[in-house]
Image (cartoon, rainbow, N blue to C red):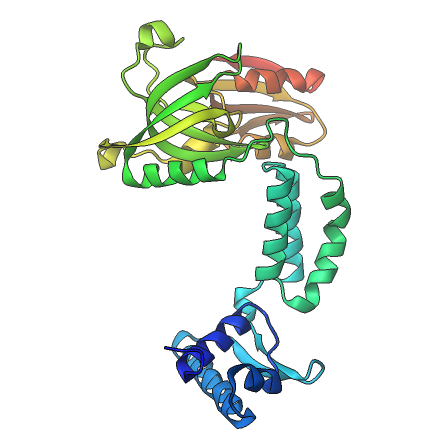
Length: 317
């Protein structure tokens, strides 16, 4: 196939249309050394292909002539695009997460708007997030970890052990662990790995030697990562259900499953129930709510203390 062949010409035109380019008949004819009638037939063939795709899939893109720009462009299916409202919401969530370095975040936002928002709406959405983009503050670790996270995700899918060198929060000591990766979680700025440690002395290393639940690692604190060829097996009945686990590990602290009961008399009981997905209101008395929740580890203790006089703990064990 050469540049002068019709298949090459049509693939080139279609590729550029898919990238949002506007194509002009005279320019294409000059570029490929053919007459404008040949280019017009190419456009018709592309349009026929898109119509067939629409008929088969129920929706698709359209090739249109834009009279304002005097050229041909691809009008992408609305089902493939975000609405203004959706694009704004996703961009706001990304910015508020602060999960990535500044360079990564700006690049993600640009590509989000480029790929998912109709061109005529991008300026509007950009204007609504411009101030937050300008004042975006990246996290202190300033680490790029997306590649590591992808490797962990593949290891989870393939049930492969991984070897990590992990920097602990306390004392900044680095420890090496061979682990069974189970799930990737996100909470309050950070991505986490839930994993079982292989061949560790639980009596000596764990507060609770009978702890059967995974250990939690902040992915940005993983200094070295190696995906091993060795695989582990988990019976289907014992598979890790991260959705259910996620309800009970709101504070990303490992440890035993514990039940907490407390009275709440703050401004919004809904905020408490949203913060603790397992929480249930057992009873209400004069604007006070008796709440029961199940969580892993001791993270909930810090949250309860942060609520001040709005919370009265009855049981936490």
